[in-house]
Amino acid sequence: MIKVNDLHKTFEGKQVLRGVGFTVNTGETFGIIGKSGSGKSVLLKHLIGLLKPDVGEVWIDDKLISVMSFRKLQRVREKIGMVFQFGALFDSMTVSENIELALKKLTKLSGSSLNDRVTESLASVGLEGTEKLMPSELSGGMKKRVGIARAIAIKPEYMFYDEPTTGLDPVMTDTINRLIKKFKTDERITTVVVTHEMLTVYDVVDRVILLHEGKIQFDGTPEDIKKSDDLVVKQFITGDSTLLLQESR
Image 1: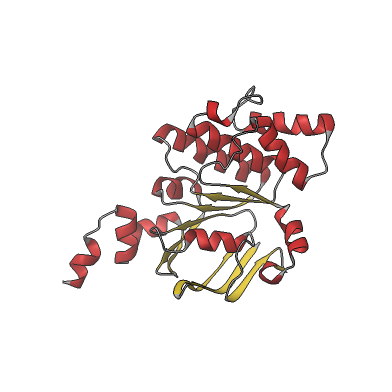
Image 2: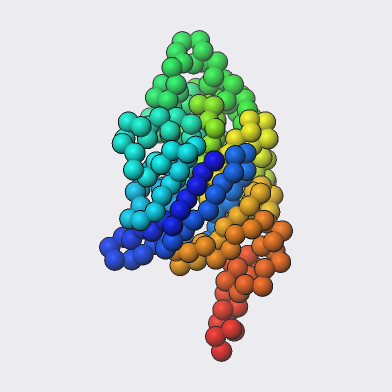
């Protein structure tokens, strides 16, 4: 379980998060949406301990990570698989070596067990036989799937996805969404998805929050957000830039 209490963060005089709080229940897929600059990525960085709040708390499995030492935080991170927006693969390493790097850092696997885990994780995302390929030989969708394979290889209890479908065509977007659902169901992984794609929200998440000007504007199910009368919410989900302008006239 993840708990965030009254989170505040300011950069160079600009308040990015202003009292954000929520709970992600065990086994839940939780979505975070909002316009660019609304604080989505800053919030995600707090959840993995890359940023410390000015005020507030972040709890994972009843452990207060927002005040942890680096060593203790690393133990918590061993439970978290992170999928970055653009795959974040090392260009000088093969697909296999990229996955092995995470396994060597976060597990005690070695030898044939390490190789077996790499093979297993690639098979789970439909990329059997790609071990020796370089990132330059992969399409954008394949890079995203290798990133997911690397994250899932450590057998995490949590999966965090940062804009997992950015830049992908509709077919590959559907493929990534299916993988997110698959690992949530098969592995019972608690999942956090930062996205701007409403298709992903409707197809994948159990609950979603919308950030607006550093605060939570909406917190509810995908069905609830479709029915919301809040103009900020309606503007985001419809993409109609004139809604708030009409209200202000």
